[in-house]
Length: 246
Image 1 (spheres, rainbow, N blue to C red):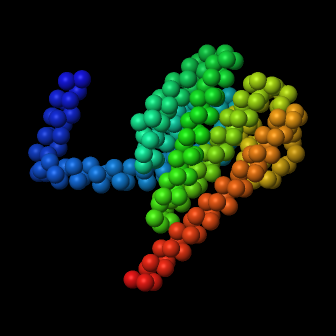
Image 2 (spheres, one colour):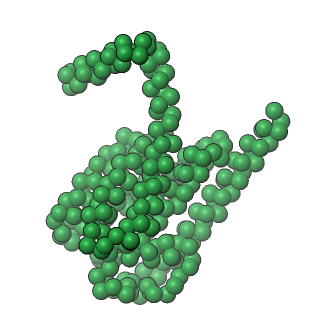
Image 3 (cartoon, rainbow, N blue to C red):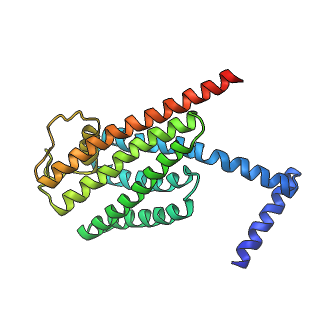
C-alpha cells in the first residue's frame, strides 16, 4: 500500500516537472480529463453494443462464443467509465462478471453458466437504471446524452437477452427456437425483435411465464422509447428557449 502511494506520488511529480505544471494546474487537468471520460466511454460502449448485437452474427458460428466472451468483458469494463457516479460499486460487479464470464467459457457447467448469467442480469440492470438517471439529470440534449440514450436502449435489450437465457437454462421448452441448441445470438435476435414489437413468429414463447416475459419485454421497450424521447425533446426545447432569451 505504501509502495503504491510512493509510485503514484513519483508519477505525479514527474508529470508536473515534464509539463511545467503546479499541483493546482495538475488537479485541474485531471478534472477536465475526468469530465471527458464518460463521453469517450459512451462512444466506445456504443461501438461494442453494435458489434455484439449486429456484427458478431456475420462471423463463423464456431468463433461466436469467444467473440461473445471478449465483447461482454469489454462492455462490462467500459460501462463503468460511462457513468458519472456509482463507479466503485459497479466496477466491483463488473470484475466479478468478467471473471465468471471467462470461467463459464472455460468450464461449460450448467450451474456456472446460470451463475454467470445472474451476475450479468444484476450488472445490466444497474447500468440501465444509472444511464436513465444520468439522462434525466442532464441539463441539455447534447451528443453525449444521445449516445447514453442509445446505449441505454441497447443495454436494456442485453438485459432482457440474459432473462431469456436464464429461462432457457431453467426450462429448455420455455421458447421454441428453430435451432435445437440456441446460442446467445438467437436470444439477442428474439429479444430485439420482441422489444421493437416486430415479432416475426419464428420464435414462440411456449409457457405462461415465458409469454409474460415476452409481453413485458415488448412493453418495456416501447415505454423506454416514449420516456427517453419525451425527456430529450424537453431538454432540447429548454435549451432552445434559454438560447432565445440570451
